Amino acid sequence: MKSSGVLGNRLIKKTYIENPQFTARSEILAKLFSPKEIRQLQCAWNTDKKPLVFTIGYEGETIDSFLYKLISNNIMAVVDVRSNPQSMKYGFSKKSFSDYIEKAGMKYFHIPELGIPSAMRKGLGKTISHKKLFNKYELDLLPNQNEAKTELRNLIAYYPRIALVCFEANHYFCHRYTLVENLRKERAFSKPVIHL
Image 1 (cartoon, one colour):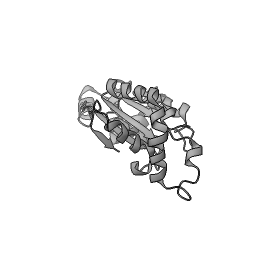
Image 2 (cartoon, rainbow, N blue to C red):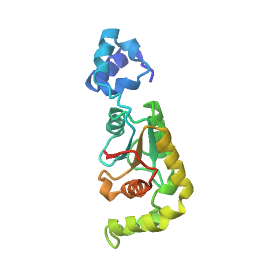
Image 3 (cartoon, one colour):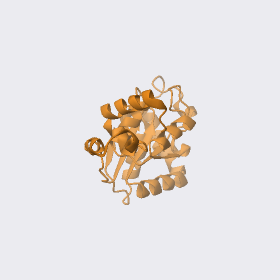
Image 4 (cartoon, rainbow, N blue to C red):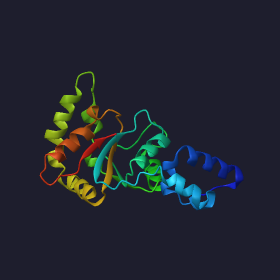
């Protein structure tokens, strides 16, 4: 992130002071703060490296608040498990979303095969319940996605703190919960899971 002028620097400093977790991955920190100020900001950084799998939905979030949650939990990689990563919400369509994730110092991966195709979601909440949809997802779709599941397992093994991302805020109403529960049934899967 490059600063532009005195006003830009003041705005960035204000943002960093109010949200010190953002400074953890800043490339311009030393240009804006003294070493003493940096040490104070570092007290707010989450440097936890305990291996965890997170799941998170962006419903009700802005791109800034969403990134703040990821950075605050020291997420190292994001796996987008949406079948079709397009969004009406600013910043959450694949191109811009992946750019924001990468600029925030995380890796972005998209595994669309682990999403639920829109045809399967037709009638959700009217003629089809979430439970019925997620049962169909687990029994009919996931068994045919061995390559995609292997890719996800490899990413989980490589990145100590990784987040599976989809839209729904409540993980019980999102397929990412079914996906991670499916993985947890495997003997080799040992990381704790936190739903943000």
